[in-house]
Image (cartoon, rainbow, N blue to C red; front, side):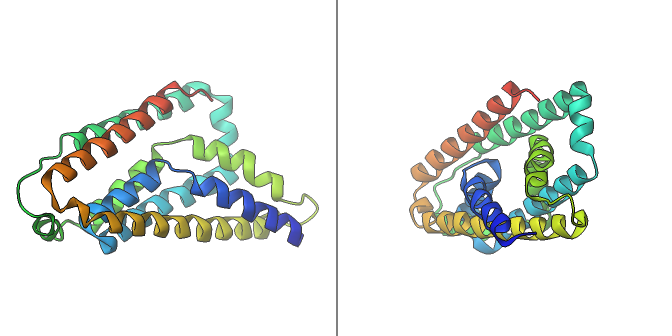
Length: 209
């Protein structure tokens, strides 16, 4: 792989990863509500799904989804339904009059595994990631060179950039925790994040392969 090709991939991936989406929103919300350390579970879940989906795309699943649009549409609608459910849950999340530090303390016992699973489901809810990888990665792979090492370099580069943006969003969410000590602010935060998840669900439901 030529250095200029790799740098082009870095630049494009940096912009794509920075774009707010369900994964980034989930990481930011988890950090704001449960703390930065707990957000690491959401990050790990999101990355696990993304790496799996991109590996599947390299194995040809992206072409399979394009060949059978009914399968793609089924996965897309299931993903949209999960995001809508998550958005409704955020919207309806109970808010009491306790200082948010007490709420955070009570949630400190939340299972990291539960946050990991939630992150994995949110990332997996978008089958477009498979098609994106199937269309995006081959643009940077030189056909005259072994493909697997090149794919490994691109996947590792993508992972570093994606995790870097997760950390940025998590730190941003953590900075919001001070303002979430007031119940009315927590309620507004729940409504905004819940509405955003439902908006992503509506967009996904309207997408076509």
